[in-house]
Length: 69
Image (tube, rainbow, N blue to C red):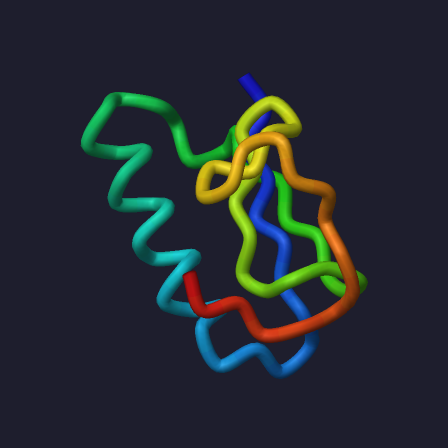
C-alpha cells in the first residue's frame, strides 16, 4: 500500500491533515512510514491511497488550491 499526503506550500490545513493521517494509520495498524509527502500542484491537503483520492475517487487532481472537503 502507498499512502501519499499532497500539500501546497503554506497550506493552513497541512499540519492537521498530517496528524489526522498519522492517527488513522496508527488506529488500523499501518506504519506511518508508508506515507510519502509531496508539495505543490494540486488541491491541498489531498490524501491518496494507491493513487486514489480518498475524498473523491475517480476525479482528476487539478491546480494548486486550498481544499475544503
